[in-house]
Image 1 (cartoon, rainbow, N blue to C red):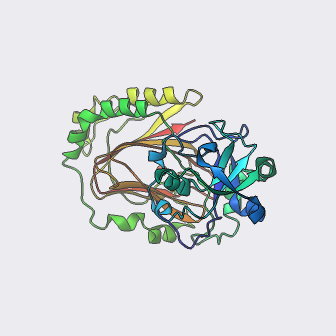
Image 2 (cartoon, rainbow, N blue to C red; image 1 turned 30 degrees about the vertical axis):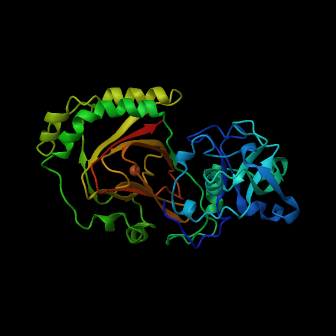
Length: 353
Ligand SMILES: [Fe+2]
């Protein structure tokens, strides 16, 4: 993840959502608290020494998944974090962490037992939470319409939204085809691939209507006819002849089982070779929630890159299976995103309708 050192620390939200670890919601709808809105509560008389084991924090029971990014490395564990009492939390702990996950992870890994925190009453914070829509509007409130804005960060992307066991099942289905795809004789090398997924590239098209990517270097795993049936084509004849038995229906069914309240529809199946990419676009012509599952042949050599809340964020794939869920709105601010790869990357996209 990119770290924007120009951002002040409070330009971010605490999200009350269902995340990759647990249910952090405080009502029926996802809700977001802007730290900027609670600055006035961070007074010295609210500083207290708190036992770390009394705090529920995002990553507490899966701390290996807390991203070891620059935010982590820059986290100063001696700047007090923020916790709240009277706060719903999935572990029924005395306190809920509002800010300071990366610091917390550092403290715990150094075997520290207690530390100083700003301790706030959640009942004072509750009215300050806003909906996702309000959060997006708020984060864009100072945006110049035709230039990439630089404002606060509001997380829209959900990482690891699907059970590891399901990803494992999907891996088993695609595994026999990985070497076949790598050997695809139609794959291309695009030496300057990075320019198509750069900040400059987004800057050029940010005020334009780019629902579908303008440039790409990828290969469809399987093409389909109008009725959804596989079709032969000269370009894809090779792919089809070797891959017609990849069980896309089974993959779709596995994803459907993970989202029983949604109608899952496979929307894309791509192989990205090294130097592969899909340029910046918004998908705003088909607004909906989307899930992407991908295999990557190497660690941190391919990525999903997106623009949100004033920042370009690069979310690297780990080796093996990855999953991401996000929503592409039909109206501005759109969800600009792109993909890049320096390894072999196989991706399946789904609409969650
Ligand atoms: Fe897309």
